[in-house]
Image (cartoon, rainbow over all chains, first blue to last red; front, side):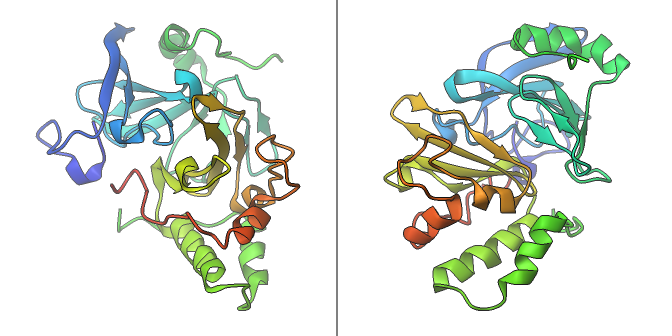
Length: 142
Length: 131
């Protein structure tokens, strides 16, 4: 898993930038695991990679090794991010509180605008998010 | 990456750069604005971009750019972290009061803190997408 510089269309990477933390698990057909960049030490400044290797979902850690982001890949390419580690504000002022999962897709029409999870995303990913981050709220209060 | 279109900055950041003019307190400050504008417009950071490491200043402050123009400002000393400040644009990052965040004792915004150290420790080559 790594960035575009090392991506091989035929599979794998010419150089691996990230390592696996713990074991990979398969939930609802998604192969998922926590990854981190060794160069980052324990500072958690590096986000998740742009490209996946054999997994469909990677989970990123924040300070204290607390999971804070899940990135889903389609054909090994970055597809969507599910974040709960920070408050997000859309361009129209709509706020998504910290601790509640919001979704971002890049590149998008409105830059960094987010939304809550759709019904189909809940169906597929609630179990994944809850497995890695039991305290993350899947829906807003109202 | 080279084919990516220019990212349109949010209105608040556009205004910030429009109002900067061409008079800066130092060459380092000018470099900071020029480099940050270029990064936000042309250098996406899907895996984040480390602008200041906590190891490169005496206060334990770190600054991370996320995606295009979102920022994390945090404090990390030893094995201790404090609650990070996450901003949706560059202007809000610069206006973040570091004392209010509990990061430092002096009543300084991030921009004032950077000016005070004449931007020492700022790095422009630590985009995790590109390393």
